[in-house]
Image (cartoon, rainbow, N blue to C red; front, side):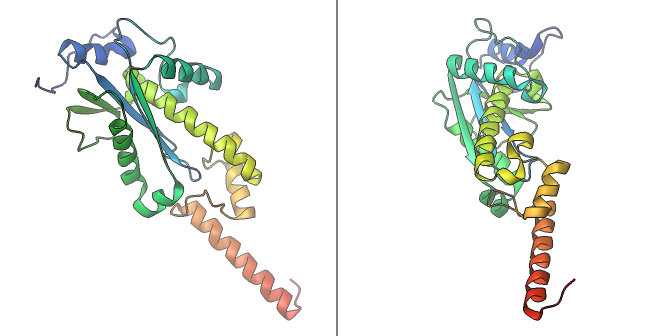
Length: 234
């Protein structure tokens, strides 16, 4: 097996440069993995893994970090990745598992599950930011990998769009929180709704702002019950 040492990249190589360098070193099947929803306080964590075709034959126009793309461009690239990828997989980790195991453990485990679910076994793996052990192949954690490696960017788009669609569906179940707008992240509007209504079943109760809102809701409920039982008025 060739050494997994860092390849030499062309400065002008663009988002495909890293994969091309790895392919020149003999790693024909390069997979990228990324996640979406790490910073949200509601909804799932979603991880994706992607193996793109040979970068020399098929480049995806506009491919970069999903957070830098408009929703319409993300949707377009999502469809192109699914139609052209040699292999892809998406893994969803629910709030209960995040609360039970911890965010970082779930983050790494989700990327590992997505990579293991690929129909094409990678010869090299690139991950965004966090190293993932136990893969059985050479791998590299790349800082801002979704901006510098095409396969990681593609995984970022699959994870982001998949999660956004889940949150839009959850908005129909729990419309009082506005999930379709903020996708479960801690905006001022989300926090106000959380404090008014208390956490939903899809909120992450291990997060401080959610736990604080839940405690506040319980205190208000207790005061209301005491007032009703004693006939006192505030």
